[in-house]
Length: 370
Image (cartoon, rainbow, N blue to C red):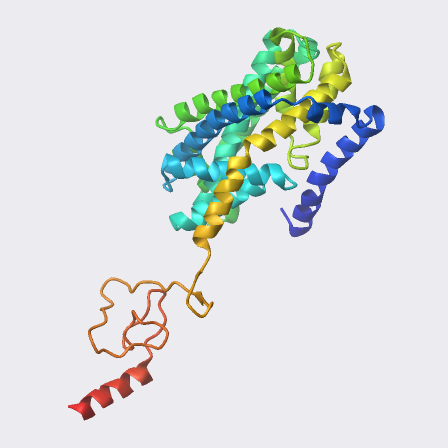
């Protein structure tokens, strides 16, 4: 993707979400959005927070499995904290992916492999979306919904499309030094190790199903809180449609496609577009509140990584330790100014050259003292 295309897509994401919201405001007014906030109760917020805690642990476990398969594993506790942080950033910032990018970069730097860290997040998110789409199509095929009449053809087209992608990837040349061949080999290696490995795919599948069920449960709570009297059997296929719409990458902090699909689905089911928008707005606020622990994680992490300051108020920069075999400082040994751990005749941990001139002078001074 060229730089111009990337910039255009970066603008299209929030603009698309804002356009959907603008149409809804034009057609329905601010009432449904305000109702979604006004009708929220502490019990609903508490339920959303508890359910989101479970889905966050499941998402972090999925990420841990994929990252481990790619060779950049991490402890589950670290994964949960990082996932909370990414959810908060995704909810608070436009685009909905800033938190995931931050999570991948931080983990890649901590693991010493930025590329694999980013790919682990990308594959983990992709796997979750694939499971959501498959689960959603199956549910919409068997449940009574506004789209059930055309679901047979939709599922068949999706299956043929997936088969075509697999066959195309297998047919493309993957040998040779070309960039395309190298990319294809990397994709195949990542999929084998990070997704379909026998130790990874069961975790990815089960956790993704649980995450989808958790998000759907939060939306059901939001619908009930905003006054919906429909049964769960009626609401479930509508919630599935909303969850599928949430996977569309055109939003502002998650807002836009969710409200648009909720308005259409609830209206098509005879429940009213206002009711759908109110439930979607309530869900958005509940999701943001449930992600607030990620803000705490972000703040604590920022404090921990802030440079310490000495008595004069100057930032004390941490220095790398010498490499193995680089020697250590003996009592009375001259060292390079500003690097108290490093002898003048030894390189530092990042490979700076030896200060040969200074070392020679120190040797000469030592000889004179002798």
